[in-house]
Structures are given as C-alpha cells and as structure tokens.
Image (cartoon, rainbow, N blue to C red; front, side):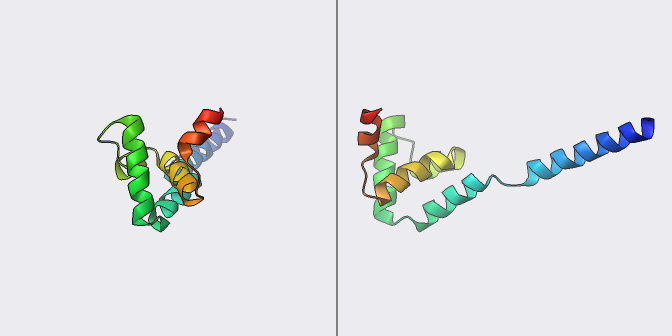
Length: 90
C-alpha cells in the first residue's frame, strides 16, 4: 500500500512539473499575432492601451504581462473594428 501511495505521489509530482513547463497555447498565439501586426496596428494598439491604462502602457509593456489582452486589441484593429465600440455595446 505504501509503495502504491509513493508511486501516485511521484506521478502527480512529475505531472505537475510537466504542466508547469508547458507554455499556454493562447499566449503563444497572442505573441504570434503581435509578431504579425504591422507597425501601424501596433501604434494604434499603443494609443488605445495608453488611453485606457495610462501613458506607460504600450502594447509591448502590456503584452509581457497579458499577451491575450494585446492580442484581442490587435485582432480588433486588424479586422477593422474599433475596440472601443465593442465596449459600448456591452
């Protein structure tokens, strides 16, 4: 019984290490979207993010902490949507 318990604990520990080492796929997609964005789109994202979060909140700064947020803003810009109008609908 003790051996079985040790095996289970070992397996759970290894699974937790494996899960912690894997990058979040949504963050990878967010970074890829930032790489594909044109300089005009990034400038527009910078403008919107500084308008919302303050003068130091550029797309690069926010993208390091919340890449999915920047990907959402860039996605709306790249589709031709104004992200501010989406907020007004809610």
